[in-house]
Image (tube, rainbow, N blue to C red; front, side, top):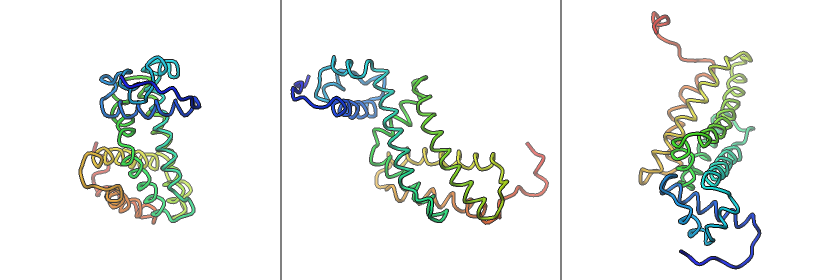
Length: 219
């Protein structure tokens, strides 16, 4: 075990050190394999102090999910200037998303892999974070598309579906790019932008894709 630091510091600072150590350990070792002993040693504190501050392994993991989820959503929101053209907003949002997940691979592992595979309430915490991202993208798509072709009644279900698809694709690409050597955040954002904007651009100009004639009634 590492020596316990004796220098006093504010509780909030010490707690962030513990969370930093926990995110690294959970992200690299997995929730089940990670131990409180490892986390305490990496943080440079005693195991009883970790329990004193964060109660239990479950509460510590939940705190990690909340912190990493908030950091990701704040990064995406901060990266988008809603006064910019629609394609620039989407591009900036994707770059912010992939830059953040690339710079914080352990945090992304906690959110995308660990929290989703260990049941409630962890999955619910991630779902809340994801819902916030989807809502932000939904609003971005809805406002720009309706303004582009003057359709205030653009189907909400269609817009919501597009946002779900875009966020889902971004999540999958982030997991892929973080494990693929040589792929940058900018390249990953460009990949998804090229894939998505061909369709979104047409939608925003009032040229949505429609199924071929004679296929409308097929399941």
